[in-house]
Length: 344
Image (cartoon, rainbow, N blue to C red; front, side):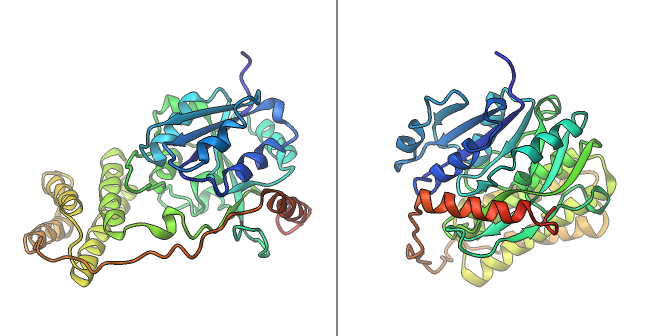
């Protein structure tokens, strides 16, 4: 089978309210014969599976339903299934711009010897009724510590580059730290192109992990992830930055702990494990080592008898979007963005 030019990986979990729109925004691209869509249902318990199955008969759609392992695992699974020369990622609540295909084709052909292509993003509400805010990518020389400001899904990646360098998303089920993927790809590539074109529309979804995360888990997972990146890197300046992020997240964890109360045994166990590794790491010296020792001593003061106040989450912000209306709004917004000199 002839390889496709571009694979679009869409991970989804309990996304019945918006997954159909994400899929339709890709299917409406005019170069669909050179494109494949890989939908990875991460063990949804709502009607996501039922909706995705409707697209399983499309020649350029491959649908996989797996057990729930988290967004990172689902994205890695999708890349492994990709037959495209290039791959991009689309979250289930986001949308590709309509008729962006001509720009993408030009960029892919222009940059066939590159490994990463960076684009911008537009941002609006779930219904696309707000005037979109456009954010363009940094130039390569503006990126600090190999972590660009815009999210990983504003880029297109050469599949062989990811596979040859064994670049993966971290597979923590509890919390997705996608910044780590950004670091892994940008720290390993010198073949990057930047285009002042928005690639997708990010919809502000108040029910997404970004807005509903458990802060205890967030800080503990960030500490683990950034420490692993610190171990992986051989770039001194990056290593200093990554280690500072580790300590910052541990400090943030403790601040949260003493303000709100202790959450659970698992997160403090993770924090203590990271601190133990730091104490045994020969590269950690001076004030950073002293800080790590201090934080380790601080952990011994934590009492598992302290319990957090219960926090109720509201389900008031539930939206069941209308596919036809949203796709109409998407087309109108796309035309304005792609015809705007400011955006291009």
